[in-house]
Image (cartoon, rainbow, N blue to C red; front, side, top):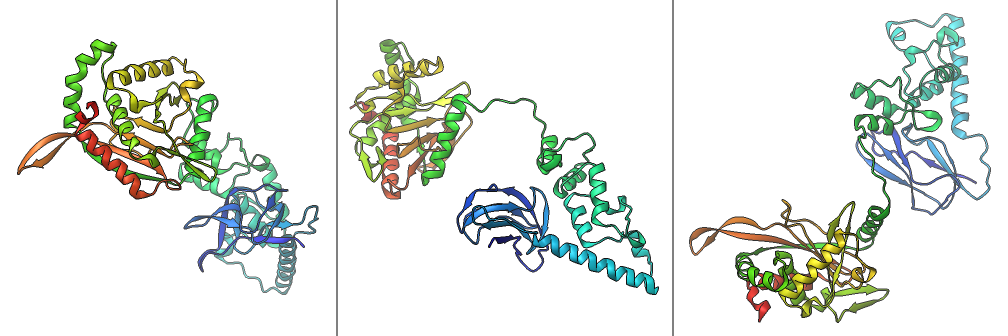
Length: 433
């Protein structure tokens, strides 16, 4: 027998909930404990879970509709099971009939008394009142056909068919923002105006960009990484005084040899590659039930391109000097921005660097480039006043953010790697020894 899914009662003061989103469609298999829909109360949003396994046979309400607590909102049963007369309708019809009988009795015995309150609040049956609320209708707009102008379901239905249909939540949003609904075509069931239609008006779209190609691929990969990998991020502030001095001394020499200017990025690549050699667990990948410790240090560098991001890979970066790294990095970045990278240029990375130092960003949380297990985010170099032997001096600092896969790497090994990287950057001349 089909089981009812009820609108939950969350606290003594909750009287009704609003359906925000159906997470399952009719005909879909549902497991016990699996979320079916999301509801909104006056305090929180939450998911309603299935109390039993089976097929979602019937949804009784649409998105944005309000439902009284402990009332059925859906049915779950066996495949092919037919639901008879819905119990809630029977209950409402019975109440409506009983109310009508009582009303006739009161009317004929002369007991009914019309008061000022009765004038202000239209007489209506419970079912008519419910239907009006579901469609955001003010009953003062409707003249009832029942005794003493009592409004019945058929009166509300007639009004609905001749007027716009608006969900309660959409009606509230429109009233709050003073939005005219006259010329709005709803996107809900039977062209009902729902909250999403109001949001669209509140935030008009000036331009649309198709979510496809490289943008879509990046989005899917980032979503997969963020949802399947337990990310942990550690940050460390590094003094850059010695790195700045080293770069200034090598600029002319490396430019003469390579034709390119040495950037901080190449120094970071060299320092990371050097640290990875003695911290192999950071240079690892999870493959099924095996953690693979890579013998090669292949550094991927995130490069911004029109409408996306690519990560060309510098192979065996630990074996390169700063001149070779500068030449190779500049070559790959040029290919990336000209959309000329080959599959070979993008394959084989074991660790990734994302450098946002050219922007006004101090730190951020980078997302791991799977199947790698770690990624380093680099912020801008900024000046900071610190105490040095009792005196205040201005020094340059950068914040490093290491995100790592906690399935592969524990906090202590990650902290040890970041600590060593900090020491290398504060003593960068060791890199050329």
